[in-house]
Each structure stands twice: as C-alpha cells, then as structure tokens.
Amino acid sequence: MTESQLATPDDRVPWKTVIAYGVPGTGAGYMYLLLGLYVMKFSTDVLLIAPVVMGLIFSASRVWDAISDPLAGYLSDRTALKFGRRRSWILGSIVPIGGAFLMVFAPPDGLTEGQLIAWMAVAVIGFYSAMTLFFVPHMALGAELSSNYHERSRLFGIRHGFYTFGSLLSLISMQILINAEQVGAEEARATARELAFVAIAAMAMLVLFAVPKLKENPAFQGRVKNNPFQAFADVWKNVHARLLIIVTFIENIGSAAIGVLTLYVTQYVVGAPQWAPAVIAAYMIPSTFSVPMWIPLSRRFGKIRLWMFSMLLTGVSFGAMFAIPFYDTVTVRLGIIFVAAFFAGLAAGAGGTIGPSVQSDVIDYDEYRTGERKEGSYFAAWNFTYKSAMGVMLLLTGFVLQFAGFVPNEPQTMQVQLAMVSLYGLLPLVCYLIGAALFSRFKLDETAHREIRAALDARSLGSE
Image (cartoon, rainbow, N blue to C red; front, side, top):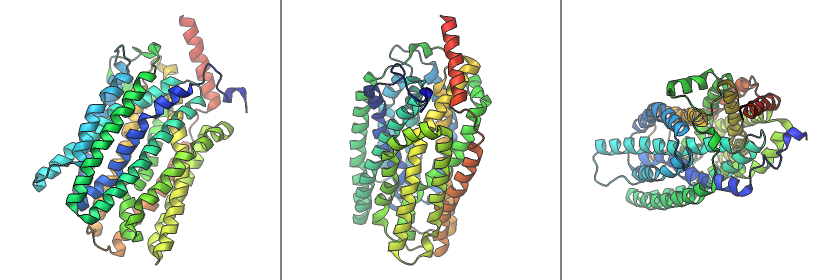
C-alpha cells in the first residue's frame, strides 16, 4: 500500500464525526425504501388506484424534481447562516419530511376516487421534495468533511451502512403491512398510519442527535456565483460529472427494479408473497455488511476498477432472475431469486461506498476549474438523476403491468409474468452492462486527483 493510499492523522475523520454523519441515514433509508418498496402495492392493492395512475404520479414527481432538486442544491450552496449552510437545511427538513410521509401512508377515509388520487399525488411529490431538503445538503456535507481520496470512501461507506440498516428495518414494517393486508384493507391502512408516526419520531430524534456534532468548513461558504444557471452549467461542463450523471442514470434504472418489483415478482411469479421481505433482506444485508470489505479493496485495486466490477456483478445477478418463471417449483424459484439478490446486494455495497466518494473527487475538479465550492449543486444533480431513474422504472412498471393484463390479487398469465421478470432481470442487466462500458472511460483516478489536490493546496497557501 502506498503512502498516498493512507489517510494521515490530520486527514482522518474522527469516529464520532463519522458516526454522527451516518446516523441520520438510518431514518432516511427506512422512509425512502418503505415508500419505494411498498407505496405502489399499497396504492394498487389497498387503495385500489390503477397502476398506470400511480406510474403517472411518480413520473410527475420527477418533472417537479427537475426544479426542486437544483433549487435545493443551489440554495444550500448559497446559505450563509451562522449555524451552517448544510446543517441548517438538514435540521429544517424534519417537519416537511414528517408531514409528507404521514400523508402518503395515512390518506383520510371517505375520499372519492378523484380526491384520493389527488391526495396521493400531493403526498408522493411532497415526500420526494422534502427528502431532497435532507439528502442534498447531507451528501454535500460528506464531501466537505474530508478531501482525502480514500478517507471519503470510509466516510460514505459508513453512511451507506447506516442507510441500508434503515432499509433493513423497513422490511420489518413491510412484513407487518403485508400481514395486515391479509386481514383487510382497513387493517392495512390503520397499520400504515401507526408505523408512519413511529418513523417520523425516529427520524426527528436521529437528526437532532447528529446535527450538533457535525462541523462545517467556514472557508467553503460564499464561494458560489450569484447565477444559479451558471452553477448547473458548470456541472454539465465538467466532463467527469457529465459522464457520472449518464452512468448514474443508467445504473439506477437497474437498481430501482429491486425496490419497485420485488413484491410483485414474489407474489405473482414466484408464488410466495410472504418471502418478499426476506428476498429484499438477502439484498440489503450483504450491501450493509460488505462495506468493511469494499473499503480496503478500493485502496488495493482502485475505486474506479472496483466500481466497474460491482456494476458487472450486479447486472449479471439481476439477469439471472429472468429464468424464474420457467421453473415449476416454488423452491427452485426462491433459490434463484435469493442467490441472485445476495450477489446483487454484495455489489451494491461497493456502489454505495465508492460512488459518492468518486463524486466528491469530481467536485474537487470543479473547484480546480472554477475556484468555487458547490457540493450542493453537484449532489442535487446526482440526486435528481437517481430519482429520475426510479421514476422511469415506476412509470415503466405502471404501463407494462397495465397493458400486459395485470389484475390485482389474482393469478397472472405467463405474459404478465414475463413482463415482470423482463423489467426485473433483463432491463437491469442491459443497463448495468452499458453503465460499466461507459464508466470505463472515466479518467479521474487517484493519480489525477492527487495532482488536483496538490494544485488546490498550493493555491490556498498562495492566497494566505
């Protein structure tokens, strides 16, 4: 291991800061995954909203994200409050996140069909907008806590671990909700309402615990142009960022499949709906606990090569799921989906650890080019890209299920089953293969980043 691969004592982020940074991810991971996994099924099977309508709602939320995400990122960069430009937004996100999450899972009884659709549209769009107020400043703060090439992987790796731990906790809630569905729609709605209140309280406590323990770099404040359009023009002009945006979109269309379609596939293709939380756990557990493995491997083999490998492994793992409906026994089908989910989750641990670390390096390149620090604008762009990929998958799911002949709570034809596993297996395979091929052109490796950091450090000393 070379000297450049190690964080010096001055570079190393203290554990108390790393933990404080990661902890709020538990609540965010719980809320985000529970909504991503369950709200489509909750809407179609409990609220009886047509799949295509929910697909359109999620699509509309992505259109709004094109405005809200860049705005949140730019305003976060420009905030000059004494409490901090990131921490102020993270703290202020608690109330809108809680209100929107409650709206999603506790629609009032007695609404007409049109009123219920309007309610869910406002709730879903509101939730994703509120989460942007947390996610963008939180990720931006992570990029500021260290400038060390590999220490960033440690920082974001721990955050990924907390986030996926929260996602694992959401599986328990999803199992409770699935069980409640077996009793009836009213029981499912009452259970969803109770769980929403618990999640809101937990998220608030985690943020209130963490925010006072995090410190921001005051030297980074006030280093953004007044023109928001120029800030995002800089993001697109950044050749490394532009490539990452394209790769992130393609990659996350594939990863969105596990969240959107697992409930449908386990119920209507595998024939074992009670195993859905376990399947997702088979994905989340290795994603969480493989983080300590990926961090040293990224030092040995390089962040770029390791991330490419993880994309290929994820694609092949998802591709194997296309074979599920061609086997007659539930046992074999479950075996295929569990093994594939395990390896896909293992690879996801690398992406969650390395991806934000690479993105932070790209932000350093922007500082080298422009002299500005606009982490918020960059992570807003990637956050919008991630949510757009999820929206595309939800939209595709809604239309494909609708026009393939999907009927809620009934056995599905082979045509519908093949439509489901095509979205669940073949589409991610193609997306990850394309993403890995494109990412092979990425040039900002450790050597290039070291040169950039040396120039920035020299520039900083010269201005003192």
